[in-house]
Image (tube, rainbow, N blue to C red; front, side, top):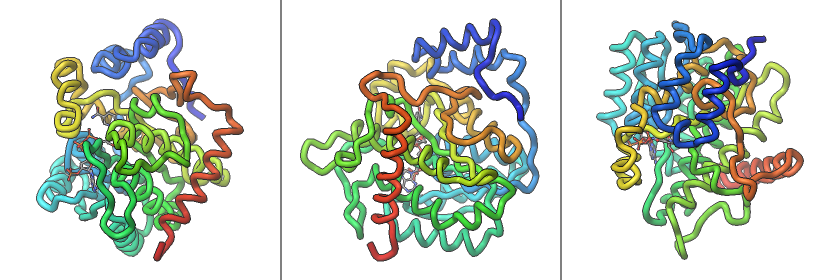
Length: 329
Ligand SMILES: NC(=O)c1ccc[n+]([C@@H]2O[C@H](COP(=O)([O-])OP(=O)(O)OC[C@H]3O[C@@H](n4cnc5c(N)ncnc54)[C@H](OP(=O)(O)O)[C@@H]3O)[C@@H](O)[C@H]2O)c1
């Protein structure tokens, strides 16, 4: 087993200083310094590896589509805008892989279920499923048919539904990976199922986003805990702070102030593509990754819980998700 812990020696010292500073870690300083480590090797080409990537039409997802294409993978690009999703799939093919476009509005669970059914019928296996789609909304919006808040639906309900319905297709791979794009925002919230879904009264998009992102952490660990040895590996990936259309539109002040320090989308998805390119089973699931090293799930004492609490929260969350994403619910 390859040791994928944090770097040691001088590189480890620099890494620890960056990590403690947060801004140094999340901005482009992070990869600029960390990639000087001897362990930061070029990625392996993986011809024929099958990846399903949500949010491929913009920002980080669009950059990942291209990088995974350069590694000769088959990338199913999921998006809701036909033209930009087709373009992302074409970019995969231009880069040397095979791009396939699939349309889906992940705010609508029925559409997500239809996507899962189509992928299960079309693909005999999936090596890597990437839950990257996401948005920080200003206003409270509910999904058309089932009435759930959109931020929660896109970040958690649809990923859970897609993963559950594709489980057999994932199990058909040698040892599939499910990679979920997390955010520094989740460090500000603790998990609370009772208050997970925000209603219209006092709605704050940044809080809804952070709670959904924290719930993704609890979901990832709970799914991992249920896997048999050699089963699917569930991991979280933090892109750092990257300059994307999503950041420009939802956090314009942050985008303006940090502009020159933000990562490029390509830098933001390096760790995502690195994880997707490693051998099956490497690294083991259940961890959060930034700049090719495992990172803490908690930064603030007020959000920290012990392992037993985390496990209980995970059981509660999975039971609730199974209920709200069940057919006809
Ligand atoms: N950029 C950062 O600094 C940063 C930091 C931490 C975490 N993240 C996370 O990284 C992921 C990508 O963000 P980004 O910065 O690349 O933002 P982005 O440029 O806005 O891209 C978001 C992607 O998600 C898709 N999406 C949003 N709602 C959707 C829906 N209802 N159905 C289907 N697709 C939907 C978007 O589709 P459209 O193109 O149709 O809008 C787009 O492809 C998100 O999960 C975000 O939370 C980003």
